[in-house]
Image (cartoon, rainbow, N blue to C red):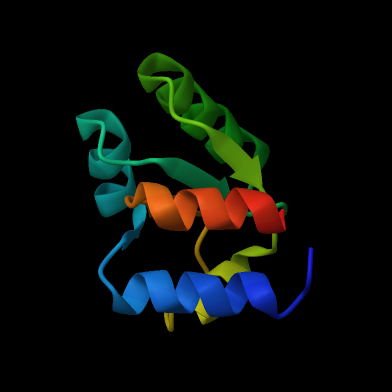
Length: 99
């Protein structure tokens, strides 16, 4: 994975409106089935990872663990984020290829 390409791609997806960030928005995207790929930060707390994994398993949402909370947040112009939901299949495929 190129250290600059993934954050740039996430920023582009966010500006296009295809990233749900924040606990409530991410959870709503996953539970509603709009989430095509769930990104979880590598430094997320164990209990939070467990809750996210349970939610993803219930809905069959693919999950990738990548970047840190600070890197995920910075990529979308926000404060540190434990998880981001990608709601577009094209961006989700591109991210999977990078990681």
